[in-house]
Length: 160
View 1 (cartoon, rainbow, N blue to C red):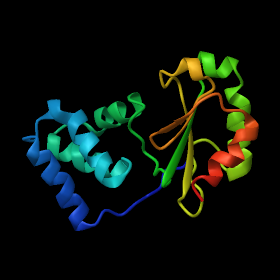
View 2 (cartoon, rainbow, N blue to C red):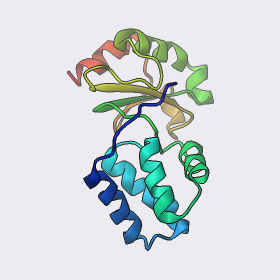
View 3 (cartoon, rainbow, N blue to C red):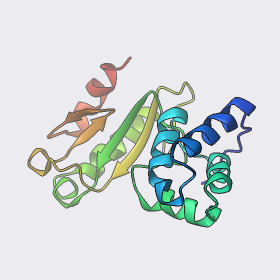
């Protein structure tokens, strides 16, 4: 996956510095700083991670390691309506892969991509804790259970 190069504006850098300052530039507050920055920017591109690294005096490799370790953090922008398909064991066994394929076909996306209009993004995750409803799809905070490939078009229509 190619990384998107972004140019941080002065106010973006000032925002990140302010977040770091609010946590007293304490390296042990790295996760809290990352959460706050992701809430603001929607994702954590390398440029944001570098500013955090400088301000908390933490190696950029460590910041990157935390961002890539925790599934909550993302380095790619999400769509207005982020779609996540659970591929945990229960969902997988009950056909989640076919549901994922149908979303890919309908949206013309691969996992990790965003539609050109920025409306939808597609991701997979391991477990949402709703195994009894498998296969499970989340669109933003809304959970859809027992989803079949035939349901995909109607789910997408709700967000048009």
